[in-house]
Amino acid sequence: MARTQRTPHALTDRVAAGLRAAAAVGNLTATDIAAELGTTRQRVARWLRGMTAIDTDELGRIAEVLGVDPVDLIRPPRNE
Image 1 (cartoon, rainbow, N blue to C red):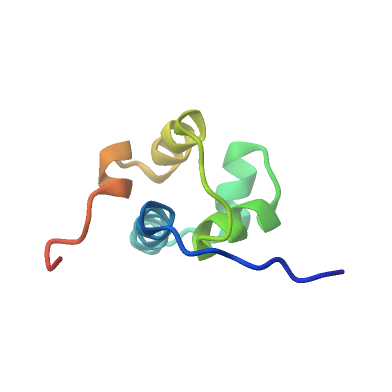
Image 2: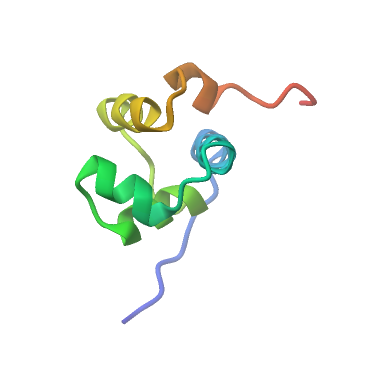
């Protein structure tokens, strides 16, 4: 299987960082999140690594599972 090349996108990377932080706070794994969303662990792992962009509907569902406001997933860290 060919490895997918990724072009960095600031917003996608910021959302991925927000997802990782929220998942860590909730002590949730990619498998946990995938089960709650009814998707695959691989898909969630790609979101967590910033390999795949998330559409706004997905972002809302993911935020709900993580127990955060969707804005918290896209807001830059306070030190930026």
